[in-house]
Image 1 (cartoon, rainbow, N blue to C red):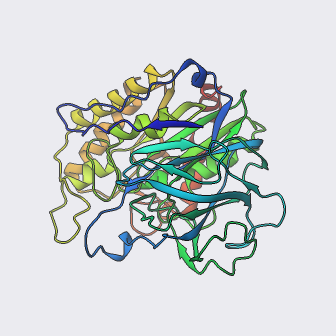
Image 2: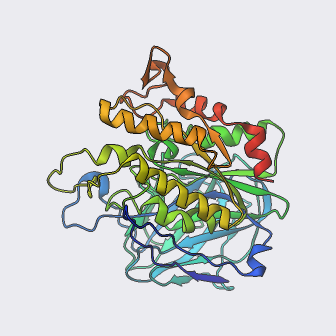
Image 3: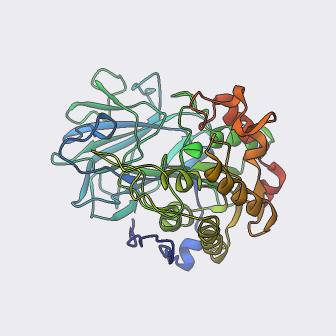
Length: 421
């Protein structure tokens, strides 16, 4: 059992941006484990009467069944559990992995108990994280697996990945990890919680980490259909015949490069160490971030839960400085990083000028190890400030399923795949 305490995330400000340092031992650096699925957590706003989007389900003394799709096959796995942002221990009394069936059901046979230090239960301290013991169970890339967790009787959900685009399930009270039917699973929710990684033993394989905001997260893509651009790119990699490279999605909707948010997670410069560099097997990252820094700075404060706060004023130079810090952190750990251009968002002229200047720097500075030109892939030839109509989900910012597919096709596959080897 390996227990690592999360380093405290340092606040990101324009004048001085720092990173979480994640030291790795020699044994860990030679680890056979490779991340096959992952997600990034964000805190849940702790206010007395949150709006519906931020109301967490009651999980105390219930079983939570979450559906994940690994992008790498293997027959020995382990599960990564995080209590980031927790103020009290995260208690899991029992846990199993099984091949997912329809809805909350699982396929009978082939399931396996997940243990921690040989025990069925585990208590993860506040701000802590833990890897399970090795579990001998076959997983197949692209297929769904259910992770069922029977939670402690006083457990409260304080962190999640809010936009999962995947329906998950909460049971009636009691331990239902062994239930193959969906009968006890009466409540649905579309977030991920505490399970932040599924790793396989695959010493000759590696992982490409996609990190960014809602466009990487797959906002407005079809639910339960894995139509985000990292999903489409994972299928493209597998379709090329390369079965040794996983693709994981560490986007957070609303996330910014330089500023934290009560709703949208830690600034990317602060979370990059935990969410990307600490993932076993990551050799390459694709970074798409910055449009929310540009937009939220101009949003007027509003009442209730102001998720856009702080309304930090940014410049092209401050964004470039943030990119350089992420690049330096990646290179310090031997990870190659590709910079993605910011996609069209029908911005007012001043904000559009910032987006255009940032994209020009990404394309021409040679600061990144390579460039992914998502802007060129999605823009309307008749009006480059806007998404092509067939690629627009309807809000002029987030791509449609077809747009996300076009993004995956725009990634220079040989260059990115070679960087991951």
